[in-house]
Length: 150
Image (cartoon, rainbow, N blue to C red; front, side, top):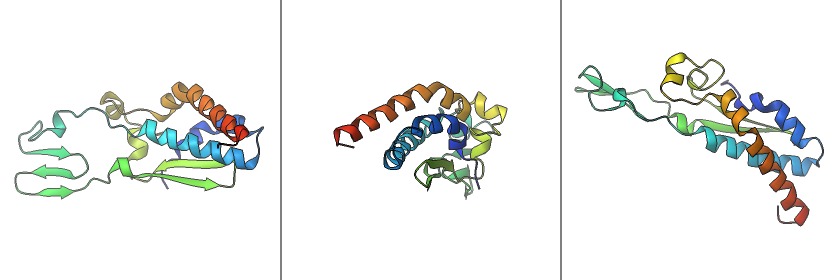
C-alpha cells in the first residue's frame, strides 16, 4: 500500500477531533482530507524533459501518458493526479493516500532529491505550512454543525 499522507497529520487530526461528537469529527475529517488532496494535487511546472524531443532529441515524457519516441508511445504513466484515494476508519480517522507506485518518492516520506529540485511538494513541509488552515476549516465545520447547516 502507498504511503498514507494523513499519517503525517495524525496529531493535528487527533487534536481537532478530540472534543467533538463522532458525527462532527467525521464531517471535519472529510472536509480536511478533501482539502489536503486539493492542496497536494498540483503538478510542478513542466521541464525540458516534458517538451517534445526533450533533452536528447529522441524522446520526451508526456504527463498522463508516458514516454514518447519518434516510433512509438510507451504508456507508462500511472496518472498521479487521479491516484488519490481516501479511506474512512471509524468516525475519527480518515486516510489520504496516492496509490501510484512512485508517489512516496516524489512527494512522500521517501522523496528523492530530483523531485524536490523540480518543484514537487513535500508532504511534511506542506502539512506544517497548512496546519493552521486545516484548523480553521475544522472550526468552520463545527460552526456549521452548531448552526444546523453542516
